[in-house]
Image 1 (cartoon, one colour):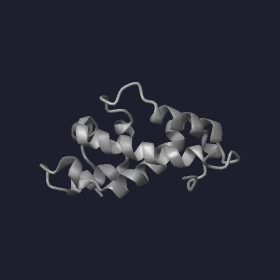
Image 2: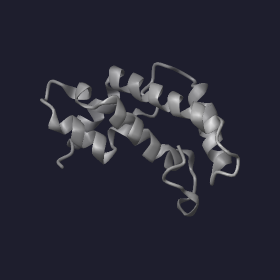
Image 3: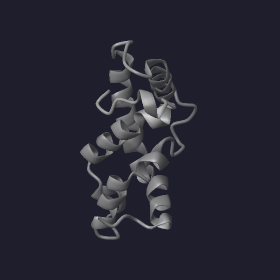
Image 4: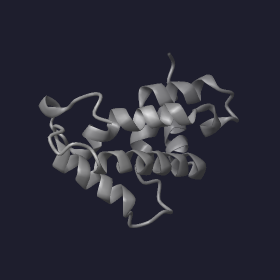
Length: 119
């Protein structure tokens, strides 16, 4: 699947509507992380990210939108839509799935501890 070029990915990550959707997806999943079993691999790092997500310094920045805009599946979904559609070509489910895929990497959980289905 073709992905957006770098400039278009940059535009996607800076889109205020896309950033708001990504923030909301991270918040939704943060709630799940905060109640997960403490034995979950990487739990302290995962919980730390969850707390940061729920207590941001600012709601006006792109936040973690860059990590999601550069997700290959999100980028491909945006590229598949008409050029004027931008972020609206990406579904909420695609964003939530990308946040799940990015959670451990974003939290700094070492690769040898990562469990793909943690959230």
